[in-house]
Length: 450
Image (cartoon, rainbow, N blue to C red; front, top):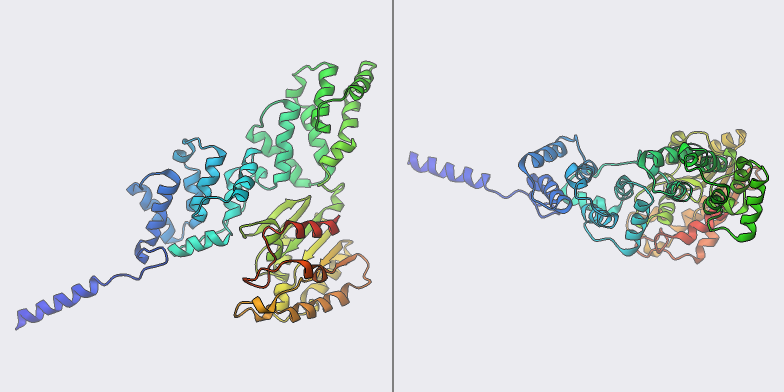
């Protein structure tokens, strides 16, 4: 009897031990999901099965909280093993889509990122663009891990417009591809000030007064030809070429001719996206509707320059996000453009609860303010729990914003709500406009900033 009791106890313990663990969305036991995520990175990024040391290193870091998902992604893509594969930019973008979004790229997204890599932005720009996306978050959720956050640190990754401009200077002025350190340095010079005079100075003094350019020993004719390619964006025309060449041959200095090209209407058109003076710099802050203007995959817009305007935008945020963004960015702007209020209205707040007092402080400092009121929503499409986003709340919030802005010096009030009657709303949530990215809406907003 005693032996039978011991045997029964043994069987019961065995049954408990062998009970299956809960299965997560990735189809793995929770105890194995972290390891499965890392194993997948080996397969997708490196094209092989995981080695035990590497697998243990990355899984231990994820489990302890030392790493999050984006750390793992960057670790694999910046690894010596991956870099030695010498992937083309096309292949790199495809790998990033598969690793972070779990799919092949769509044509628009593929062209978007390949274009950025081709002008000198690094793969970190892709990671920063994907890390906040819904697709990456869903992938991480399926493995039960934290996606993490990431912001670019290299100057060449902060603005496509700046990086493509500097990359072009290398080709047109120096006749070669950029070197990374030089590209990053000149991008940093422009990013630090973001005014047209700095851009003009980098192009003229930075490149045409460089030792590398001086060592070319160009004659006057070749010098003028390079000026046309760099500042006018085309080959010379015969009358223009003869005009400038005659001036040089008559003794006028090259700096004088250079200044004429650097201030030409053609070059001013090239750099027209940059404010003329630092006091003209515009800081734009928005919520998810602004994100949808600029990104097709969601995410955030963090200190990015679009059409010469620095933009901060994120999902589900309002007044506190605006204050933190301004605190991070600093005081180097003359105009604050704001398209917020949707999330504040959904919480039953009035414009006077937060924004009005802060805007009064900015006006007292001499700042200008552009207020875009809240666009319409569609009550019939709102998800359960989103009743606060009803169109009535948007209208009532706009009334308080309008009453404050009316006839107030230094404030431009833009009636987005009326314009949004002609914009297509996403019938999946009743809040965001469609299709993404809503570039036409951004073009409308930026037109008021000009």
